[in-house]
Image (cartoon, chains in turn blue, cyan):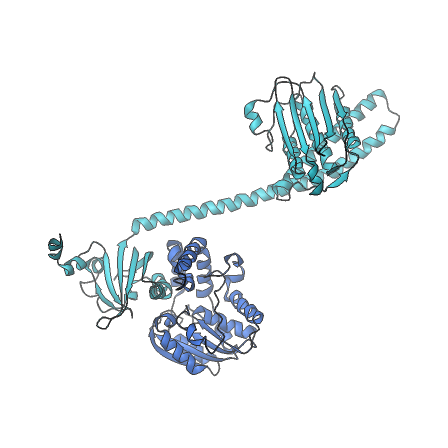
Length: 232
Length: 373
């Protein structure tokens, strides 16, 4: 997810990339359905990792659901990160009274049901970070192949935790200075959602990118790097 | 050949291909959708061109596309075998299998994604049936496992509850034995003692079986045992008492210190003797011999006469709940030999059997090197 972005910062920052448990190169055996049934479980991991690494006043960059996981982590342990960069965050995907998340509850049910039809596509895409390791492409393929075999169930539980989350009440608790990067035409986290996040996190800044879709870190890395540079 | 192929109209090949074919700009706008696809989705020819690709996807497929497939296509040139639902003009959906390849932008062409579809209705139904059958099987297996565990726990608990009253009966029998009793009274007390000891053995076996099945293993505590002979003799005496009509011969050669769990060895001897008494020829003696070899190996034989064990029974002789043709009322649960073998194994040893016209012989060997384990 960050292969085109991370190298731009490696000269000036100590960059730590992580795969959530259940995805990519993580230890699949550490996966626990109960712990990871909500985003809290993932946030706890970030806190644990941050403390283990002795991070203090660091910068946390999260994309999509990981942006919200980062928000939760920064609330749990404010000392770890003084800056948050949220790429395409959404505190809630399902529409609610006076809130447009972009999806109806039935859309999400349909989505979760569709996992059974598409185990390979879903789980392979859970592991994009390990794909096409330029130095050792065979390793990436091997890992992907083994991951695909391992667990579409994890992918589905991850999607459930993501798309049924509601972290709107957490946003005002954020103390870190926050940058929100918003794409145009992003159906997963639309512009009104980005604006909602900006309004709820005190003092945060929203930058509207020219990039379209949900993954500017892959489709428009240069623009993402520029926006991040300008903020940090 | 080349000349013949060049005669084809490629535009026509695209438009009337026997599969869906659509060319999408990297920003998600359809450049051209072919006839198969437009017709399948209920649109007028050409009316999809210029619209957004994601609008012909169901909501779930849209999320899959935006969060996974589109990013994947920036990392690798192609993806295949993806199952998607396309949305028709009337709002209904139709399942398809998709393959796609990404073509990078060049100076005169925008970056594009070429996407092909084939219909997957029947396949989807079949896959869903398979998936649901697999889920059913998994649920069934889980249920069975739970029930099985519960059954075994039930047996273990029951075994414990049976032990206490039995211990009371055994104690009461010992007290009665010391009273002045009539001849008939002594006989009855003797029978009671025999039955109590047999029942105690059965409960031990049931508990051990439950324990091995619950994953606890047979459980032994190894000590250097210097007085194994009196211990074995005590078990022999008990069985003699319980089977007064039968002859049980026991011989011992030098029994050096054996690293073992003496209680377990007693149980093993009891099970083997019990088995020999139940299944051997009642008119022939049962004999036992125990010795320690020069290399420190402890050996124990239990031999009985009678018909040989049939070949088909031999194969499963040491399996739990396998019961032979016992005479009289001595039929047990079929756990004795299984437990005996588990005990031998737990000591790093073996329990084997040979059976001929003249004798059936069980041999237990516990290697001396067990002392170092």
